[in-house]
Image (cartoon, rainbow, N blue to C red; front, top):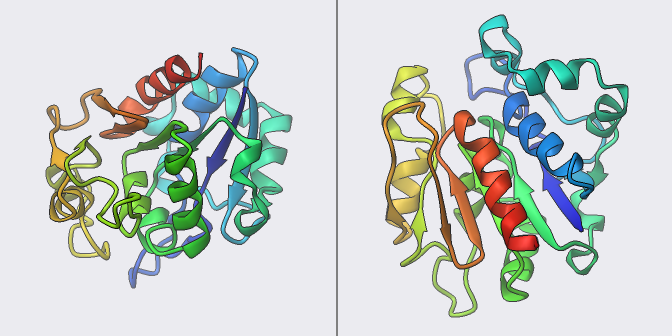
Length: 225
């Protein structure tokens, strides 16, 4: 099995002067869940090269077993520092695609044409497509074969408005994931803030927040088997 991970290349948190990027736990947990099952993983970003880590995901209170493992894993560090360029990726080479979150995707992956085309190609081939937390932002401009938003009429979840308010970034982000999914016609639902929650609808898997990253990976793996 070959799975493509797509990470953000964006590291500026709006006009705050602070940094953002991808959330370590949302990469590390699914990465190891799949890697330990023998899945071959490739990581790509819009710009290629080093993927930016969100500093907020690197604090002491954000650490998990998987983030600690990542910190001590030279091979995984190398993967993050030498990502492939998204435009050079061929969907036919992979069985599924997975998008970890962090705030970065709100700015770049939401409108990156290579990413949009990639997701549409995976979807048309009925291959699993997975997103967690802020990563459903990458679905903002993705269309289904009928020309309608891909999420229209589909059961979806993603980072909630109340979770965004809790991290005090409602006024900083370019859009709210929950609002966007609803505006695009998605049948949005959620659990309590910071609770594990993931949904499958057809070949689409979405998870609500960092705590849901492992569940999304498990569901993705089940679909691949």
